Image (tube, rainbow, N blue to C red; front, side, top):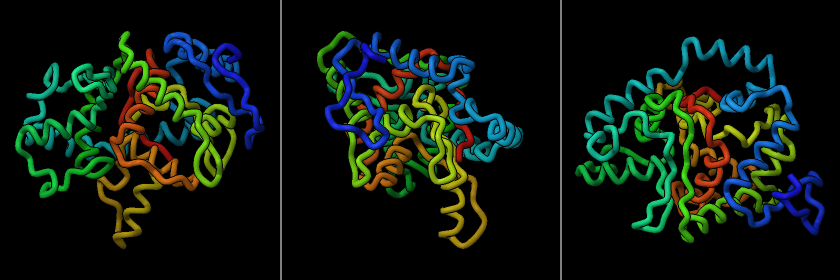
Length: 292
């Protein structure tokens, strides 16, 4: 990725972490893909939608078995009921069905990045829903179920995030890119440290997945989240326990490296999602999905 990166003056923890130079989003995308294609020559572009399961055959077998009776299935049904209950189809193109592939997008009116979750929340409030009373909060629970249902209706559609020729849009993209490569927290790690430098390696018993295709399967149902919720409640897990959005995961990653997480749907995380998702353009959506 020589054209895409310049070497850091200081040696990183892994000795590999690059820093992006200023380049067009299109050239960034080409170089980003080229890196993974070179590192994992046997894996096709569409396979990256499967994350770590594209890298490890044993884990892929276990994952495919779980997809026969997916634990997120009931959550999707709940999300569909809530989607209809709150009249969300009135706020989206195509009635909100099969639209996730175009998110996030840059809103020229507000000059900010709009995620699917932001538009869901805006619609709820527009429709007069008391989100506090209904316990509809970003990241998880019923709110994540709505997002999961909308993602489910978009399965098979290719990610198509657009970076318009607008200075503000390019600035948001560049901000997201800087976030992805910037080191933070007490462990001094960046997103790139784990998902580029150390991709395919083990950490705390888990395999580090590639950043390419990483946004294709959210919201996701994570075993870790389900177990944590059930343990906290002192009983069996419920349908929505393991469900969470991409920005919930961003917050968890920041905590793992001992960095203070940003608020869900903050400008920082939304810009990160803009860059992160653009890097997976052309990959088919397959969310929600099961993850570790």
